[in-house]
Length: 334
Image (cartoon, rainbow, N blue to C red):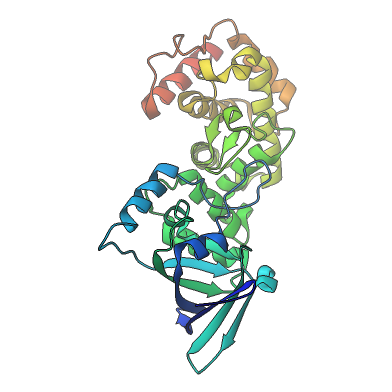
């Protein structure tokens, strides 16, 4: 590796890894730290796709790699095409090449090395690395998902988020995910920016359930009602938003104080989604309005105590959700 003014040159080789072109090389940890970045999902903007860094995990790796006799598998990066002004690969033979990087300018996206690199910016331990050359963001996200989908600490909701961005036609291929994201992304929904995707959010304390739980609840609803056989998905989305708006209005105090109430926790979410199945079965599927749901649910207001020590204090898991549904169904006389 050579340092020419503000450019680092790293000697290595190029080749193919599966269907993609890659560069293989070696560099000190502090250099790789300075020219790379983790594209962490910002749930407030929807940009990024990775989980937040676990500092304890990273410090454990730092302690390990700085020991005598330690080693690690190659780090995996992507040389982002849109950042090519900051990197250049020059072939020096049929397989050899020179990777030139601008000093201190991040252009290597950390595909599989976020936790290993996070805390070793002050060390010069040599590391092997592989960089995909010019993967687009979709391809990079797919690669990250393949590598990390079974990784400890990678939340199911973040994996679901990746899936939702990789499918060509989300509404057709995974309608449950489409509807779950719609509830989170539509400003008219009481779940607007209230569903955790597994990334970083400045409004994290306002998140009330996970994408995994919401899409599972919706999948169960879709299977039981088969409503997509008689309604297009946009009408289903509007109906779900209308229903949850009614729930949030009828139980306004409970909805606003979700930390001390069960209404948006697992048993409440699943129990209320199951109740919607029962309501539609009893009253039909002709696009019920928010006003209809409010009139129907209002009778529950004085009868149900959603506090954690209230009516459903002993309910837990899927069995508990069924108990919540049965109780609400009975109170409505359905």
